[in-house]
Length: 97
Image (tube, rainbow, N blue to C red; front, side, top):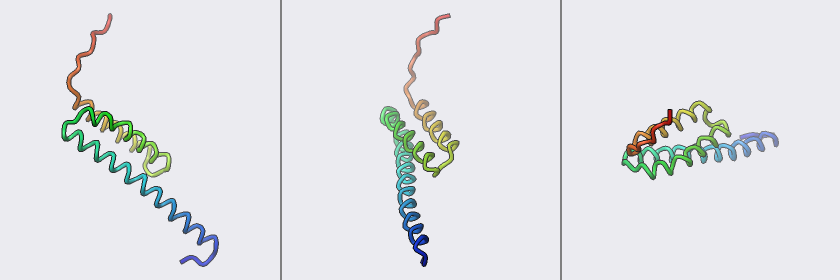
């Protein structure tokens, strides 16, 4: 246990930040797992509605320095790709030449 007053304060701050960071990490993992589960079940609309929440959670984790920005980009792109692959085939209008 710390003896100095500044070390005691640093310990309190560290515990508070650790709790906050853990909350953000668990939120990110829960949302990601939930989205993957929806994709696995074939629920395209629900998974697509879940994507903005995944984006928000990953961006918050990057902002706090919990994950690297490239990992965030990788998570977002893989989930987006899986959701779009799951989407029913939608024919697009032909391009005007």
